Image 1 (tube, rainbow, N blue to C red):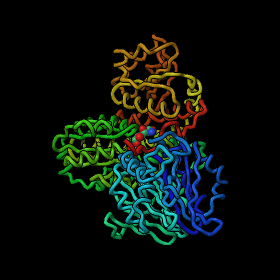
Image 2 (image 1 turned 90 degrees about the vertical axis):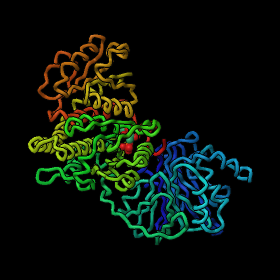
Image 3 (image 1 turned 90 degrees about the horizontal axis):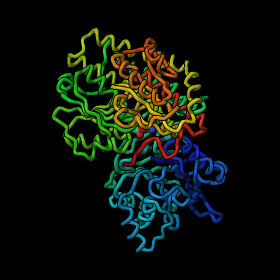
Image 4 (image 1 turned 30 degrees about the vertical axis):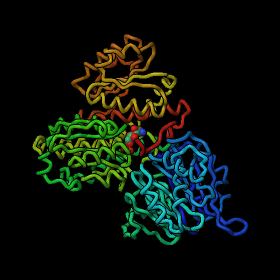
Length: 613
Ligand code: M6R
C-alpha cells in the first residue's frame, strides 16, 4: 500500500517526484505529498512540504505541477490510509517540529503509541493521527549529526513493517532509505539517483536498480549511492537491470490500464510459457529441483490472497488431475494463524503478482520456518517473496498497474499448467502423448484469448444492460466455481455491485432465497461432465426470476433454452477453461465500471499491493 518516490540530483526534484507518484498512484490514492530541500531568501536550507487530500491531481494543481517548489532533493508519497483518516494532516511526508527530519513511510509502526507517549513527555508536539509521525520525531531525538547512526537507532526501536524515505534539513542533497517487510529500491541515473517503492515510478529515468534488503540503509547523493548494514558498516551491492521498458508502464493509447492489460494477456501467457518449452517438453531448471525431489513431493499446499488464491483453486484441479498429487489451498491470511498441518514432503507454493503481499510473505516464512520448501509463482522480479522463496517461477506478464489484476492472473494460470505438466511427466502420471497434447493446447491459449477480445462488443452491450443491477450471483461447479469466484471478485472491485460466487449446487441450501425478479445470475459452464448439473441449477434460478447469463464453450448449445444471454468461448482442454472463460468476465467487470462512471483503474478503498495485514 502507498507509494514512495525520492530523488536527489541535478534536476528540479518536485516535477520528478510528482511524475513518479502519478505512476504509483495505483498503490494508494487518498492523499499525496512531497517534501523538497529548498534555499530560503537568506540562503538557508529548509525543507518545504506540500500535501493535498484526494487524488494526486490536487497536489499537482497546488504546486503548479511542481514548478513552485524549488530544489533538487526530495521525497514524495501517495497514501492508502491505515492509521488516521485521509486528510492533509495525515498525509505524508511527516516532519519533526522544526522540519529537521522529514519522512515518507509505507507499512505500519506497531509500537507507535508507546513511542509517541514517550516523545510527548519529552516535549515533541504531534499534529497527525498517524503511526508514521513518530518516525521523524524519534529520528530528531536520536540525531547527533550522523544520519546513518540515527537510522540504526530508529530501526532498533520501532516494531512493524516499513520502507522509509528520509531527508534531513541540515544534510543538503542527501537522501536516506531503509526498509523491513515493505519494498524499496534504489535507481541510479546520469542526472541523479532515486528511491521508489515500485519500479514503474522510475522506469522513465532508469532501469538500473539496487534492491534494498531487509534492514539495509541506503544513502544517496546526486553522484553516488552507498549502502550500510545494521552495524553501520558499508556494504557492496550488485545492481539489477530491469527488463521492462518504460512503455510497459504507460497506457499506450488505451483509455485505462485495465483494458490495456486485458489486451496484453495473450502476450503475457506467451511470455510465461515459451521460455519453459524446449523440444516439445516442459523445462523447469529454474526451480532448482532435481527429478528425485519432484518425485519425493507427496502433497502440495498452495497459499495466496485474492485473485492469486483463485488461481490456486484452479491449479488444485489441474495438479490433482495431471500429477495426481493432493493439493490443499489456503488463504494466506488464514494459513498463518491456524497452526496449519504440513505433512512431511509437502511442497508449499505461494502465488503473488506483486511479490509483496504481507500475508503471503508471512505464509512463506511460516512454511520455511517449519522446514518446507517454498516455490513462489511471482510476477515482480526481485520482490520480497521472490527473494525469500527456495524456488521461483517468474510469470513474465510485465508491469501490472490496474488495481484489478487481469494479465497477471492469466500468466499465473499458465504457470500452474506448466508446473502440473512438469510434475506429471516427472512423476510418470502423464505419458508422452498426453504431455504433448497438453503442451499443444497450452500454446493455443494466446490465440483463444485474442479471439475473445475481438468479440468484446457483445460483452460491452451486456454490461451496459446490467450496469444498474444491485446484486449478482456467479455460479459454477468444480473448476467453474473457481472461475466464478474470480469473475465475482473482478466485478465487485471495479463496479461496486454486490455479488456472490457460489458453488452452483450449494445455492439451494439457503442463498437461493436472495434471487429476485431480474437479478443477474451468471452461470459458468465450461466442464463438459458438469453441463447438465449446472444447467439444472440455472433453471432453478430462472424459475425464481433470475436473469440468466451463461458462459460456455462453442459447441455446448444445451443452455440455449435456459439462458437469456450466452457468451460463447473457445473450447480448450477442460483443465485450461479458466484461461478463456475469465476473459469475458474481466471485460464484463470493466464495462460495467465504465457504464457506472467509476474510476476503473483505481477503485475506492483498494490499493494494488497489500503490504499490511
Ligand atoms: O500481489 P498479489 O498477487 O499477492 O495480490 C493478491 C491480491 O491482493 C490481488 O489479487 C487482489 O485480489 C486483486 N485486486 C484482484 O484483482
